[in-house]
Structure formats: C-alpha cells, structure tokens
Length: 392
Ligand SMILES: [Zn+2]
Image (cartoon, rainbow, N blue to C red):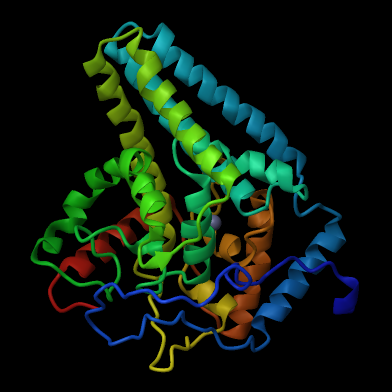
C-alpha cells in the first residue's frame, strides 16, 4: 500500500503555524547556559515520524474507523455531564450531613476531572470532531468549570505540546519556586522535602488556577516567559462568561442555601481533589524517572526530531486498566496523545501497539509503567531526587 493512498493523521508540532519568534526571558537555568531568546528548533525527521504516520494511517484505513466523531465520545459526554449534574445536585440541594456531602463533593471533583480529561481535552486539540464548532463547544466546557480555554490553548496545546519537558519553554513543568520537577530548574534548600509537601500543594492548583492564575496571565498577556496575543472579542466574552458562571455556581448559588464558611470549605474540598487528580495525571506522564528533560545545544537545536522528542519526554501508565482509560480520557496513553493529539482518545489503546513497535524498531525510547501505583512511586522517587543537593 503506498503512502499516497492513505489518509495520514496529522503528526506535526502544533506550534509551527501559530507562533512567530519572539523575545522572552529564561527561567534561571542553573545547569547550562542556554539562550532562551529564541525558541528551540527540532531537526528533520529521520524516518520515524513518517513511518509512524503511515502505519497509523494504514490502521484507520484497514479498520474503517473514524479518527474523530466517534459514537463512544458522544455517549461518554452525555454520561459524564449527567454524572456531574447529579453530583452537584446531591451536594448542594440534597446532602444534609457531612458524610452525605463528602462523597458527593468527591464525586463532583471526579466528574469535573472527567470533563477536563475527556471532553475538553479532545475538543481543545480538535480531536473530538471534524466540525470546528463541536470542538469549540467541547473546549468551552473548561470555561464552564472555571478555567480559560483561551489560555489553555496557549499553555497546553502550544507551549507544552511543542516543547515537552524543555526547561524555560514548557510552561506545564513550571510550577513555581516551591517545586523543582526538572533537573534544569534552580534547586532551593526546602526542595529537600518536596516529595512530602508537594501532594497537598497539588490540591491548591485548581483553585489557584480558577481565582488567580488565569487572571494574572490574562492581564499580563504572558504565560510564563511567553508573550501571548490579545484575545479576540469572542474569546474575551468566553473568558469572562466562564469566570462569572463558574464563580456563580461554585460559590454564590450555594451561599443562598448554606452558611458561607461551609460553602468555602466545600469549594476547597472539590477544587482540592480536582487539583490533586489533574496534577497527578499530568505528572505521571512527564515528571517521572523515565522521562527525558533535554535542552537545546548552543545553536538552540534539539538532539531529537520532534516526534522522537515527544516519545522520549513522555511516559504511559496503566494501559490495561479500562476504568482508568475511560475516566482519564486516554491520558494514561500520553505518548500516543503527544504524537497524535488530533486523533480521538478512544483509539489510543489500539494505537499504542503500533507506536510501541515503531519506537522499538527505530530505537526511540518508549517507557510505560504497568500500573498507576508504579507511576506514583516513580513520581515520588523523581521528586525526592530533584530535591536532593547536586542532582541532575
Ligand atoms: Zn494535550
């Protein structure tokens, strides 16, 4: 079968057409002097990327399955939104005691996470549907949960997906001075204990994102060191509408029925659980012992081509768990997601066999943790290692 006959899924760095080179500062790289004033360049593909695209294209042609617009996604979206609505209703309008409210709050956090992992994430990557308006609608579910889809597009889709684990470029590994997750971030004395204190800090991430981080990025027009363009008028409207609606149902509406202190307490519980779930799922893919943290050379070029870089900086986990695969929107298959971000996540388990075999043939690292807990243990060891003096 020739390549020309195949409808090859898009496998290109998302940054290519969306960014112009722009000046931005570094992040205090302690180990190497790297020029962060220009964005790193990836060398040309040496065959791995082309072969991977060809094989995945052949898979879709042989099975006749659509890359997007999968019926499973529409059913899943309905189930998750119903789960979320019922959890909210139980928490705010039904629960009378703490032992009724607590499970409802945790269920709501898990449902919010499922919306983010499955519906919003696929929509934001244009992996949900061929129709842009359906993807946009799915992506806006993030705004309804209180976080800006406009800022997410730049932070996650552009900076993280293009420059995974590259210090000073990938804003998803910049978690503030309190956490050191990359060997190229400056070590401070208190990082020695970060493998203990980091877990509750993850719990503050969602609330901080909701009430502070987005506003800071929005008004400064910067995400980490990267300047971002001014939002269009409709992006402004979606940003403010999302903040108003989410603050309304998270905080204002419940205050008509419950004491203020109780509403604030349960806001912390729901966003705390959500922050831990989302942080851990991200960290198991990128901040573990098996993931690489490469830097560009003196001429600002990376050693690996883009597709190989994605595989080398990302790790899969718990691939055999259908429950996790469903709940996490396939984000336990992050290598496949990074290579094929515009393919609907329901295909990742099947694609993982093709990706793993191709990586092995081309000598590209393909790392996987057999279980969720193996990933957690590796993340813990990585944090401990990054917190010790003189480690890299
Ligand atoms: Zn993504």
